[in-house]
Image (cartoon, rainbow, N blue to C red):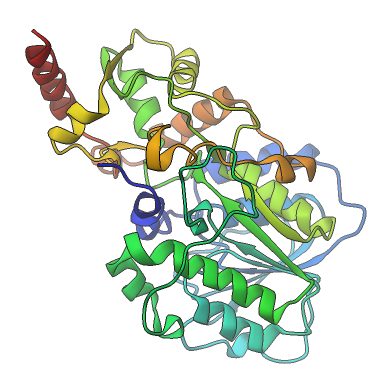
Length: 385
């Protein structure tokens, strides 16, 4: 039993609840002081902008000398950005009035959309008024995860419901396994319909790093830093792809600066990195005496462990998920997608985590408990004996 599309969205509502005024965001803004200005300042509209990657987009855009307008519900406090940021209040469900008029933007970045009606309604209001529409999608749009090295031309998931335009965020969450990929694919199509020749589709995999309130990837650095035995599904050779939210955010802004259109997978690194290589890389960054213990997937599934959920991020590198962590990123890399060292992501992630309130750290949002892990290892050894 493993997860793919479901796990990508499982904690979306949790991740979106992260506060903007975090030490991680302030530290990131400080890092950007030496970033050179763009050749041409842009007027950017960001739909959302207050979730996980949005604030990194804003900070990087400001560092590059751009003007930013945010459109969202205004439910979270906005920081005093070191640059010009305008806030437009509204709701993607029923209130786009603040976007109406004759104002124009060089580019619009659509972060939060997961249902096609949101793109349709935005398209009706913004058509002819933005020079580029960058839609943040997902690798879960693909119909099949079994082919290693699949690129952006692979077949997309098909919607099998009655009316895609009647789907809401609530109906999506109620049936994530079946709806997430197909509705994202239809949202992409809506973007291309309303902004033909002006659309950039970005399909990330697992987004990780500081401010990730899903705790999916964070489970592994925390567990490895704690030390002792660490249960690892499989034999360690299965691939694992992730992308730091800051790398994704910065590249998205550069794609707007360069007016790069088309469809791009955005995960990483640019080479295949195994589960063990990832986990040993985490151990090198954290230190400690952790010992990886490999346990067969079929045993874990027999124990009702959701591989990819209870043991997050992971997906078997064979069978139906052989290609899930082997998505081709050549097009994005050719367009300038770059990656921070894994050690930097881990160090910054743990620094962010350690500054969270104690009650938050006491209840991670992902991963099995140490007690459950030790129980599984005990059962595994008893079976082997």
